[in-house]
Amino acid sequence: MNIKKWQDFIVESVLYSSDRFTDYLEKIDDRISRELISLLGKDIKTKYNFLDVGDVLGDIFFRPDSKSSNDGLVSSSKPSKAALGRVVGGILTSNSVEFTNKELADFVRKFGAIWMLENDHSSKYQIVEGEDIRKWYSISNYSYKTTGGQGTLGKSCMRFKHCSKFFDIYVLNPSVVKMLILLDEDNKLRMRMLVWNLGDKYFLDRCYYTLDTEEEAGITWLEKNLDKPLIIDPQQDGISVKLERSSLDGGKFEYYPFMDSLKYYNPKTMELQSDKPETKKTDWYLLNKTDGSYKI
Image (tube, rainbow, N blue to C red):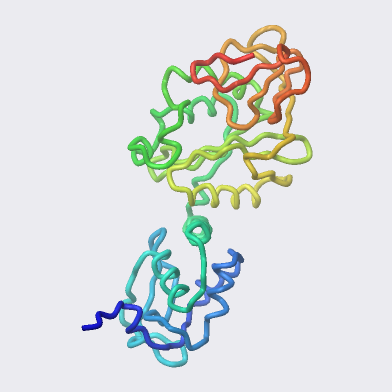
C-alpha cells in the first residue's frame, strides 16, 4: 500500500492574512516576507487559509480552509495557534519555495522583534551609564530565565561577582560608552549591549541576550531613540574610540574586562580599537582575558 505524506492531502486554497500580519511582512522586507506577500490572495497549496499575528511571542494565529470564506472573511470561531516558523515553512515548502534554515530563523527573529516592540516591551528598554553598567553586568540582577543558562547572557564570562571590579573602563567614561539593557516584568536583566559614541555615529558592541529576538528589537528601539546613525556589525573593522578617564596614572586601569570588539587598548593615548595595531606591540594591550588582566 502506498502511504502518503500529509503534504499529499493539501489542496489548493486562497491564502489571506490580516492587515496587521501583512504590515509585519512589509516591515520585515526580506526574501521570505516577500515570498509570503506574493502568495497572498492566490490559489496555493496550503492547509492554512487565514494568517494573523499571535498573542504570544513566536506564535501565529491561523484558520484552516473550512473556517474561512472565499473572500478572506473569517468566522467568529476561535483561531488555531502554532509556531510561526512551522507555519511559514510549511506554506513555502508546499509551494516549492526554497529557503535555508537561516533565512527562516532570521525571519522569525525579525517578526518577533516587531511583536515585542508593539506589545509594550519597548518600555523595558533603557540606556544606562556609569555605575549602572557595573550593576547590570552582575548575575545577581539577571532574570531567572537568564540565570538558567538561556541565551548568550546567561553564559557571559563577565557575569560573576568577582568581575565587578573590572568595569572602571566603562564606568569612568559615560560620555564614551553607555549600555542598552532590557528588563523583564520584575525589573531583572534579559539583555545588554554596549553602545560606543564615535562622535558622528554610534557603534553597537556584541549583544548578550536571553532570546535572540531581543537583540533585533533593541536595535530597532535604538534607531528610533538615538540622535546619530548606528553601526550594528559587531565584526566591523576600523572602529576606534578615545577614553577620557582612567583609574590609574598614565591612562592605565587596575583591572580590565574581557572585550568583544574594541579589544586593543593603548594606555598612552587612551585609545581603544577593533583592529590589530600596526605600531609597536608593547604600546598596546590585548583585552581578552577573563581574570582582569591583559596580554601584550
